[in-house]
Length: 266
Ligand code: DGL
Image (cartoon, rainbow, N blue to C red; front, side, top):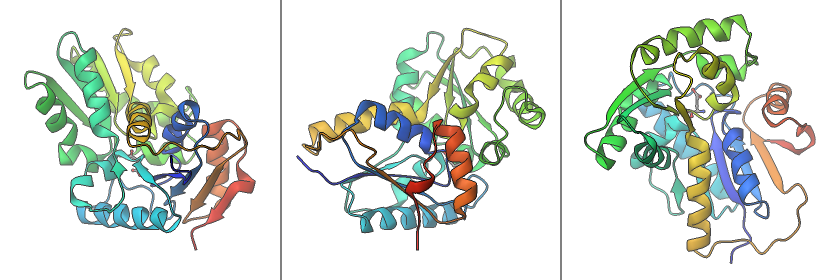
């Protein structure tokens, strides 16, 4: 048993989609969330900068005495192999690749993720390591996280639809039966994505949700479960940027206000 909090980080508010899942399946766990909002988006940064941000975020959460960290960011998860830590850090890529490999019937999987994540080739590598015969199509979505972070999330938002139509064009021309949302921002616009998919039977997988399930297993199997039984709001949110911006976008993501719980990083 370990009553310390679980640490979760992302470049911004995207990781809140994973936090929501963690909260849903482990309501007794305290959570410390860190959104590196001053540096969002990570997806257009160099590999070196992504690693640097990842290291910084892990150190920050460690300073808050967390017991385990979920890198609720596909972009940092794609470089986790290059980031050392003395406490466990789980990424979002492998869990969803395993699920996709299990789920696909025709062996054709599409991935939407940031430019940096796609450049790393991590989804393809991870999926084909699980099952070499899988065919993976990886689509970079350079503007998507920023659009979402700036509130372009409704199913009729013109800018969002323009970007998504571009990013889904190739996916729609391929016969994929499984689509991985490989960036934690993307589940917020899942309905808009679904509306634009020609094949309505495609299974859409949320990398953050699959990671939350694996995190739960890890916490239980490693005997790190909290004995806390209080169901009260046991989450702290730290950000490196402006509170007003994060507070607004977090409200849209979570469906309730967390304004009073947001603290500055420094
Ligand atoms: N939500 C993050 C990810 O999963 C970061 C997106 C970004 O900052 O570009 O990759």
